[in-house]
Structure formats: C-alpha cells, structure tokens
Length: 329
Image 1: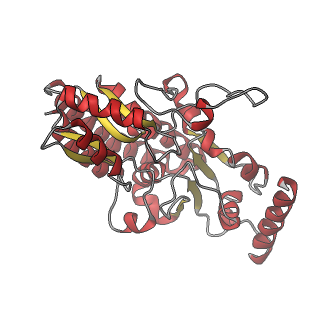
Image 2 (image 1 turned 90 degrees about the horizontal axis):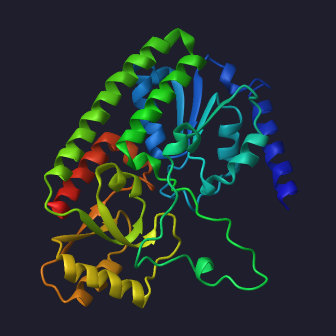
C-alpha cells in the first residue's frame, strides 16, 4: 500500500510540474521557495526575510489548525515540498511522513532543515513526572507485543526562547547560502529579531526570579518542558506533551488535586484550544475555593487566519509570559 501511495504521489507531482510547461516553479521569476511545517518556523523565517518577503514564496504547511502530532500531508502539500528550495521541519517522531515526501522531491538541490538536528544536544527527551498518566501502550505492554523503542524526543523546541535564538541564527545562515546576494540583509534582520527574542528571554528570567511560586500545575498535555527548564521552574501535569490522551485517570486527577491542595496556586494551567474539564475536576476535587485557570499557548494549532489577523511568535510568547505571571506571582 505504501508503494502504491508513493507512485500516486509521484504521478501527481510530475503532472503538476508538466502543467507548468515542465519547468520547476523555483526557476519561474527567480522567487525563493520556502516551506515551513509549523508556525514558529514560518514566523521566524518571515522576520529574517524582512523586506525580502515580497520576493519569496513562503508557505506554512500546517495552517488549518491540525497540530503536529496528527498531521498527514495532502497530495498538494507533497507537491509544495517537492519543488521548494528550503524545507524546514521539526524532525521528531510526528514527522515520520517527511522521508517519503523528500523521496518524491523534484528539486534535488533542496536545503532540508530539521530543528532537532540544528539543536543537537539541546534536545530533551519527554519526561514522565510523578502523577502523570502514561500513554496506554506504555501501561499495557505484554508478552508477544513489540517493546517500546524508548523515550521520545520532546518536539516542542520552539517554546524555549533560547532555542529560538539559536535556530534563527542558523536559518539566517542557510538563507544566505541559498541567496548569497541578500545574505547581509538576512544576517541583519536575524540579529535585530534575535535581539527581541533575547529581550523577552530576560523578561521571563526576571519574572521567575521575582516569583513566589516556582511550580506549575498543568491540567492538560504538557509541551512546555523547554520553557520551564530554561527558568528553573518545576511542574506537575496530566499528560506528556505529545500524548494522545484526553481523559485523565482517577489516579491522575487525585494526584493533581492533592498538589493543588498542597500548593494552593492562584491558577492551574491549561493548553490553548482544549477543554477545561480536567482542570475543573481537579479544582473541585481539591476542595479549594477561588482557584482559577489560565491558558498557555503552545502554538501547535495556529491557522492561516490567525496569521492574517496578526499572530506572531513574539506576541504569543509575550502573552504567555503575562499569563504565567498570574500563576507564579
């Protein structure tokens, strides 16, 4: 079946290219073609391009609200990837489809950038914390079943401002290699943008250093490990960041409720776009009055409409800081 799908995708790609008179679109009009899978990559590149954005074809692949962990490319997506000049993806387990996409690529001079490869030793493994509900297959492995391959890398690298600065510097260099005539523009734009990232990083550090509370209670999936590790915060959560679970067990609810009762936070934390059902149950079970909920945005489901409405990486991370302050102050 996989071979059949690959053949079909190959035919679709070839048909699309012949529809353009047989010339790869990268050569038409001289526009640099860049495909970024997730929003933070897209927005970083947009800022590095600066005034060159109008002369570049920049595509956000996951632009419909589907998150990284459940995305599968369409034939149209495969065609966009096939003839782009630069392809940027996260590089974790959720990107298992990328190898097939690149195997079908028409542009053999494509620059391929994996964020996890760029970060190298900075990449963290997903962590199972006390009280956290493990994935179902981790709980019920039995005789004759395949053993787990081991811990997965945490894919949410963009939620570290320090990672963002390092990646933006790398992206600027790669843009300069691909478009040498404008490499100084990319370098200058990246330097200015990294300055903004570093300034926000300093604000996070100052807020945490002055905080009375150093522990987050996250009644949801937890994709923020890079952020809490950057500033020395602790946390408890219902699920790991890449979990497909949505219903917390009695044991997890009870554990988190006990932590709420013990730590008495002003707010527990939830993820954008989800239900507050777990948080409400945890708060009710804790028996404490007046505990609220606050949302942190992981940027996993940003849509093209959000982009049109002005969503950007810096503003979302700034809003996350303001919301974080309501938990740790």
